[in-house]
Length: 140
Image (cartoon, rainbow, N blue to C red; front, side, top):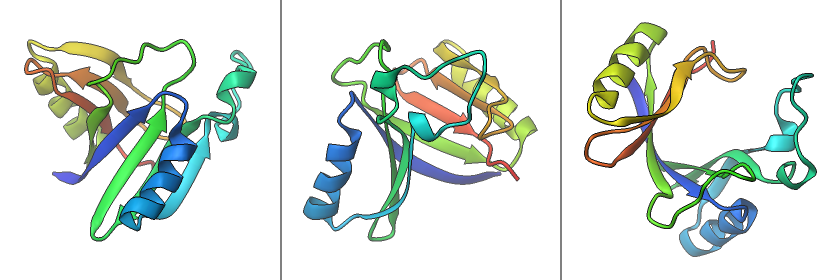
């Protein structure tokens, strides 16, 4: 069972500006913000200085709708028209695998489904219709 789905905006280094804009324009309430600099320290990978203040993930509430957003990591491609994805939160890892496999059929995998420090199963895929999806199981 899918637990939740969110519209997910991907910005190019101006995520903090976008948060303030949506707070003012839409009455959004910021529920959480994590920067790349706040993320889990990996001794094998140092976060570049220009990435530390970029948004890794933010959650906003607009009325009854939850909106997520992040900045691209410096060096990642950014193309206008590809900044909206849909985040799916399945109940467990096995369901995430099944959804990921089905969405990737005829599509393109951006990030293999894998364990991350925030999720036991996270991956990115663009389906055969050009729609970008993020699959993320919530950590317990």
